[in-house]
Length: 171
Ligand SMILES: [Cu+2]
Figure 1 (cartoon, rainbow, N blue to C red):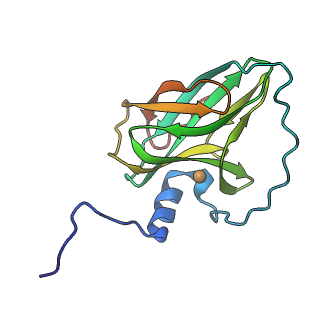
Figure 2 (cartoon, rainbow, N blue to C red):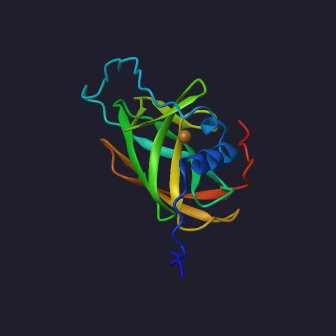
């Protein structure tokens, strides 16, 4: 008798890539891989300004499978100090990573800038959140709790609605 391990399914890299491209246009490219960071252009924190953040427009397209999903939202900063989104946690996923997109390439990054008097836009085809290892496949209309963690500001908890897989927000 061959021992079976029900419930444990290790997805191969190929399966991940497939699920990814099915779900996410931004992730359908060649996965990036090589670094090539153009150098950080000096971060203007610490000039007396304090970031004042608010989050809007969050949504989660319904993922085709439970291996991964993408999350999109906008963080607005009406304060005079810059901040950074450093991590996101949710009961829906074992891990959430931050992905930045340059052209058609995406790469995992440690943080995403929220400029002073500016905004961080996470949108389809651009920077996004990547959720991996979901506890279940969320249904359209379900609300998923995300907690956003920042370098300076206190964490912000939001309820993110699950939208149809092909949903695109209107501008
Ligand atoms: Cu990605």
